[in-house]
Length: 315
Picture 1 (cartoon, one colour):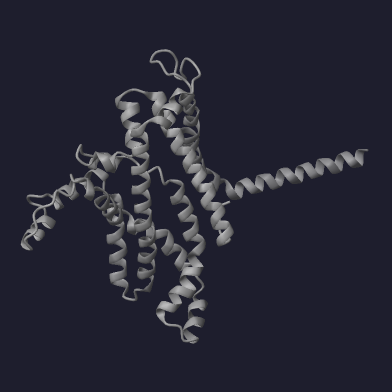
Picture 2 (cartoon, rainbow, N blue to C red):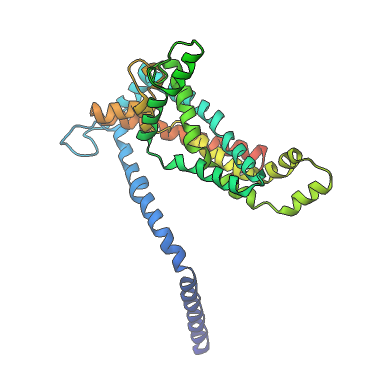
């Protein structure tokens, strides 16, 4: 009995020593994780409790979680033509933006990787990253100046060819192209970083073997580079598809005018207008909950399709 007790005590001491050694080795990693984890708990997970307002009637001054259970807000947005118009606008704008601005950073990263003149390569990288750090308000101010019908550079150029000035920032048919162009200018370099990182991790022996076999530069890109970064591409695509209804309202709100409202009113601006300006928190929560549920479905669906077709997925 004493021998068994001593052996168990020895095992416990060994486990304790292993735990202490483990924490001594990895405590810095856990310390680095503490702030992001705290951020997600405080600003992402705890606010999820507020989704209960989608099924509760909120009355100011009578509790933050409403006064009675109801499904009227869900039924309301399902029958609301304004909601479905905003849903359509969000879907069209998001899909258009995804179709244009998802492949561009991949192409840009591959092009940068193929450059051999290092000074120009570094300049191109730096110049493409800088717009990411420009405030959205400043970006819209730059667009207003550049596209101004009276003094904008583009309209002055059009005037030289006998074309009447176009109010790009006000006319509905130009809202989506201007939005997509501004996103490409602002985020191409930044989004290309992760693809550049994936490309630099490719084994150079693969390129040398392909070159020895007589493959051209384009063939090396198609048969070495793209297959090697396909897992990264698929993961980024899944994440982008998951946020297809979450465009963010800052840029859209700044570009919004009564004339282009027919195409610029999206779910995020509808939620902002309904919840903060009209103080209809329960209805705004119901709309936001719908957006989140659709995002979850899209992530799961795109992840499943990716896993079945390419073997790559995020879970």
